[in-house]
Image 1 (tube, one colour):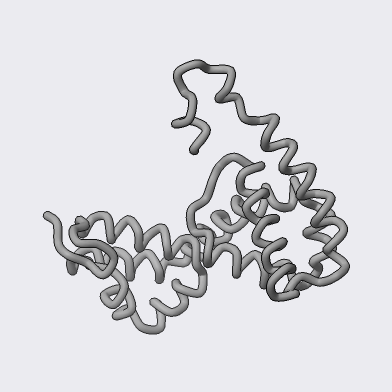
Image 2 (cartoon, rainbow, N blue to C red; image 1 turned 60 degrees about the horizontal axis):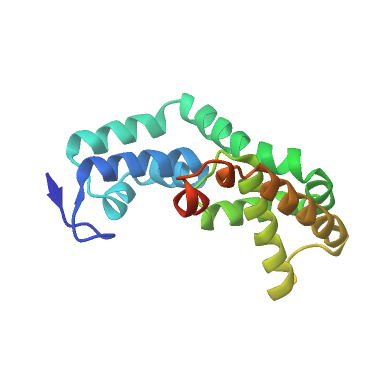
Length: 171
């Protein structure tokens, strides 16, 4: 069954349920908001009563905090592993900047270099346009950006496999 939703002309309700679950797992703030006002789910997603009830139950389950923590740890790991000096230089600003990055970059990539490259580009843009990156992080950011760009380029194997060509490179 497909119903019109806020985001597209036709989208199945199950897709909204799945998207809501992803959004909740990736956002502790959204979980807190929904705990305080479960109607928020109806404002954001087209859900059946059953789906809504399941999501409210999931959000209120004590295990949800753990799920959010694991999700965030999995997203943070590549950044800390591949850009440790930048993360350290960001100091207490790291959390604010990571949270802001994740709000805008909801699509994750399991390729550690891709995820790290996206974050470092985000930081470079913040530095260039807003000056929101502490000066102590500028040098490590530049150095690690060059290293990640090179590592990412070296990790691409699409040219080794005829037939994958542009389709694989676009991923």
